[in-house]
Image (tube, rainbow, N blue to C red; front, side):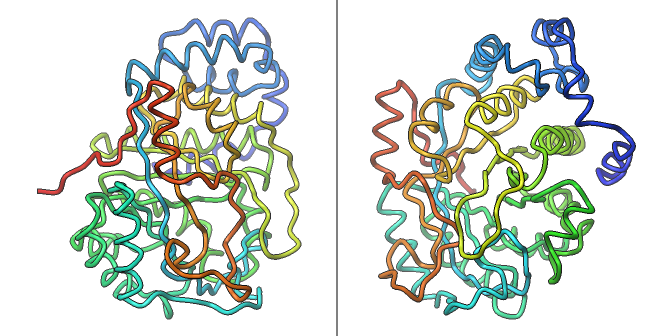
Amino acid sequence: MSYYEVIKRTEGLDTDGLFHSISRHEIERALASEVLSQAGFVATLSQEAEKYLELAAAKAREITLKHFGKTIQLYTPIYIANYCDNRCLYCGFKADNAFQRKKLGLDEVKKEAEFISSTGLRSILVLTGDSRSESPVSYIKDCVKILKEYFSSIAIEVYALTEEEYRELISEGVDGLTIYQETYDEKLYETLHPSGPKRDFLFRLDAPERGAMAGMRNVNIGTLLGLASWRREIFLMGLHAKYLQDAYPDVEIGISIPRLRPHAGDFKPGFEVSDRNIVQIITALRLFMPRLGIAVSTREDPILRENIMPLGVTRMSAGSTTCVGGHTRIINDHDRPQFEISDERSVEEIRSLLERRGYQPVLKDWMKI
């Protein structure tokens, strides 16, 4: 059974109503259980469970220490192109936003790689807009050939690819895939993606599994918080992660929980997601999936990032920029970031913070043989 079939089975459920009808007894039973069931996952995401956040957080900290110790892996994004054929309503890179587009030349990619590697980081996330004509797989492969001389782990966050295309990139040196479904509500997805290749809901939904089948070492999924009711979105994303982890036990499965940030355009989030909601999301996911990787990016402000670290976070970005070539190029008025970041601290500042808090910052966790 594909994950799409899992989603279709939930269509008739009043999931929003379900999250508001959970009793205190159901929450207490879930928090007392050794292994959180699907029903327990619903209970910990419920409105009533907000009253139990301290208890849930304490258990999440205990589980995280057991499975990951006090380690946080650090990485940074490298934007190599922002050409895009989509008109996603919520994105600063959408095709009908008029600004000067940019794609890095290979010499510029090398310059970015040299700068990022000088910070000590050995894990990067390569991003492009969604344009097969301007950023074809061949271009991404050429960039990876350069990047693998500097980094031991290279993940990609690009348009959805076929299984064979993922295999091509893996053979060149890519070992990780990040791809967000944005929303698991198929009808809303169609509204938010009026045109462009990303409009194909099912092709994008199945991309993480194609990556796992192709042999990615780690696969990271996510939902963009603010587009839809967060409880249902996190519930379906959690089931998606569980599906992948069960089906591909040799692949490290991770999630991201990005909130919408200011960007070029006039799109406004339809649903508020508070800091307290973020705490509930992280603790519920950790209780449901003890071995799940949880990444928190520089979209979030420094204070929140520091406070939620012990609750289940395993990966953090540092020294980030969402502009093409933003690590080394002089950014001018013609350049556009994909979105604004909140935590502008350098890799060294984040590294020092982790050490002060008793954590081991992991700058390299993988060696290709």
